Image (cartoon, rainbow, N blue to C red):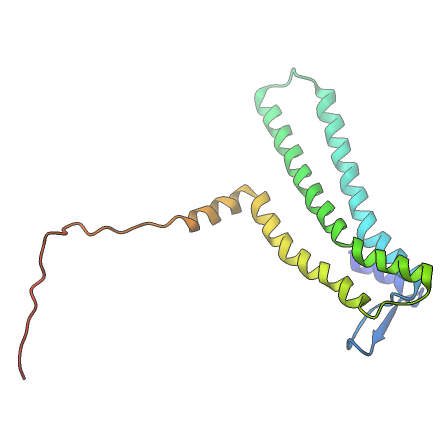
Length: 172
């Protein structure tokens, strides 16, 4: 869904072009309206939505007071914990986009594009793909338990250590 919204913004702005040095199509960093609208859609939109949901859930829980039964309190605290973990993961992804946006702002100010801009912009994307897998592993308790069970080693001890083996020797 995000791709459709992103393309409906980038195509009229002529923001997607073929990069001959890199051999693929991508949003041009020199097209300032295109790259800023793409950044707003990709980074700021989802971050603001999740932040709004987190604030709304937090206010709702605080308005409920301490009169709630234990089961409802546990469910509310679990929901708040899950939303907090999602917000932390999205914040980390947001932080990983800062170097590329810094170079885009440097381009806006100086007018000179850094030749490594595309490479620097794609490094956080690949790092976030690897980091997101690890972050999800630690933020989902079921996955964390599976990994911890894989790490435990079961040592097999022989039952009868005193039994000697006979060797059979023969000639042919």
